[in-house]
Length: 441
Ligand code: PMP
Image 1 (cartoon, rainbow, N blue to C red):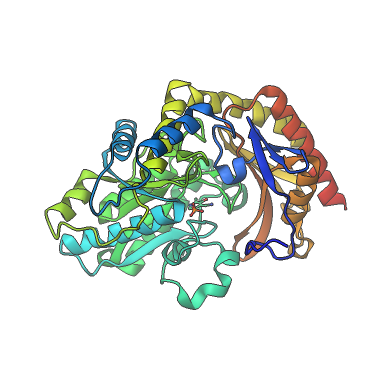
Image 2 (tube, protein in one colour):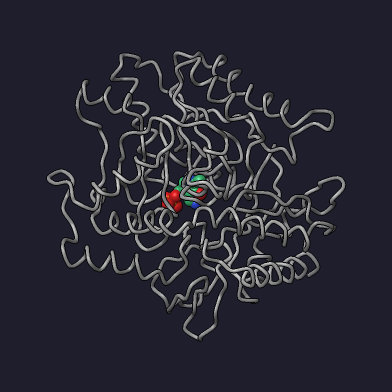
């Protein structure tokens, strides 16, 4: 019997033993098409020789040097490359081991920034309902997903959660998408004023909401207005591109499509593409310099930050994305995926919405397509879709999201950027079988 403490004690999992392009192979030889890159991680598939070679080379040279004593060649090279392609004024890179660590670092950096510049009254974070930013206490506090937060309420920080920009459910029938976006953004200004601008550190959001919503981009104009509001009140904008960054949406960073840049950007997942656990927080020179010329010490840190092997892997991943035109490919194949999903589910009685950008797509499952009534949560629909898909040999990422206290179900798709048209056909065919099985069963 396995001695691993599992995510779900009622499940026995197959043992993964191999990877081949877009497929994961288990110990019985069964092949699973990785339609969600695990959780939007495996952007290069499971057998990228350039990345594994880079990891091996670094391993042979130097496995570890603590960042309290040394910097390292791969960490410097990665930071250089990240900054060369970063949006806006991002100038410094803080390397960590994953998404939650990047978010924790962002929250603490934002707070310390205001302490350093003499505004210690600022301590409040504003984030959005229907969001997930990680499972550590700070990141979980920022997230608005009720299911994930439920048991830990007494331990969490007091964070304000405003409604998300979620056109499918929250735009009024007589409202244009633009007007809706402006109204949704207005909620941030209202909350800043209600709290008192002198108390607010940062607004924190995912440009395209992943796990808790199923690839929901904001409508045009929303983030530009958000950026203006943050600037007006001196509030930092922290963007969580842990899922939607690194080319996933067909641009290197999702915020490029929204034509804004953050003060702090968090990335992970696709940064290491699964070859190493790695994440990063990028910040502006202004934030860095406030600390450098103030106390000089960012009061944070982890043992494995800036890990040379993880940095070498991430450098090889980013090089692959840039040199092989894989971000452009994610945009192109994303259109193919969207078209195939529209063919398969466009008229489906239980699919209310098909959405996303690039190879970051979602479908929302509803009991009634006309009223948008969600399925009864007691049905456990997301888990059923996941199970049926897995039986068919498809990895996808169904989840339940919460909005206004009501749970709804969606399926998130985030396949590797190397996916072919025939593999997209296989993905959509297997997903159709899983949805039919789960809804009908
Ligand atoms: N932010 C977002 C948007 C995420 O989707 C996730 C993970 N699903 C995280 C943060 C946390 O990342 P990690 O699991 O690497 O800690």
